[in-house]
Length: 320
Image 1 (cartoon, rainbow, N blue to C red):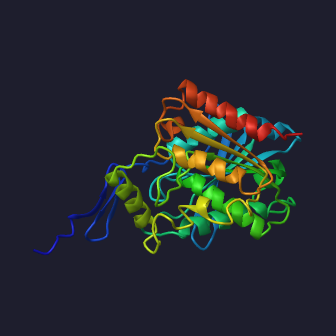
Image 2: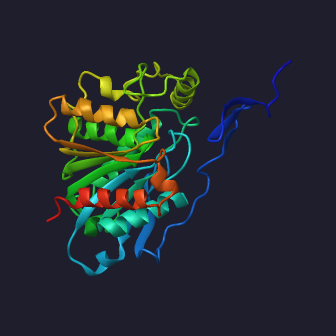
Image 3: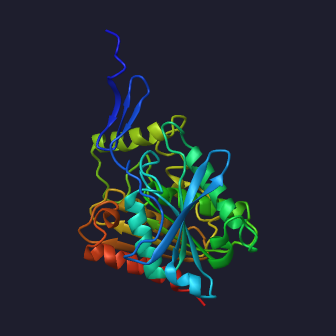
């Protein structure tokens, strides 16, 4: 019997489903909220198109105090998570997190929206993220198209960050900045939250259940149909012989969670980076008793509050 259009072809519930007719049903990360003033944190935000070709936007956040201050603030470029397939820069999850972080750290943040798989398979997410960073960098001399970046961002004090797949993107963009210099932008550091890396062989005490491994690889293949598999350098850059050699910053903070299967890749990243010949400082912070991206789903819990303060301190360490 021929399959009907309504039959499920790929089921990755509770994340998404793909049907026989090609329809994508996202089960998480579908809600969006507009930008504007957040009265709780006094943070302002706006959406700006960074690519006319793809019509992709960034959401820019600034603390309300910036409008009455002459001091420029550290700049964070943030890439959202979601296994490259779900969520957006405009979801309430990321609006709430970045409002809180911008308020706590007193920074300017640019949250990048990128095209998602499977409609736009890898490398679309990386390509869009690099295009967005180049657009951000075009403001370094105060003559870019967006006045908030011209007036308030300190391009000598730039950080990249992301959670899960966004942390994966942040790593690859940091590598690219060392190979393709961006005029006027000094990348100081990187914050990787629960980074989405994988590989063919287990590291540490990773769960060796074949079903778990098959699901993780299956989601990666959905996002990247032409991949060579779990040792593709995009999902497993840590075992690349040049790992760390071209990392375009000198400070890295890695945040992991005790109950997250991906935590061992975060620790492995730290170990390999230290032994790579990279001339910088790397630190891992592990949250006890927590799961993957807990700080987004439980932003008021004590571990999430502590994580937020740690990230804010990391970005303010070099502030003049």
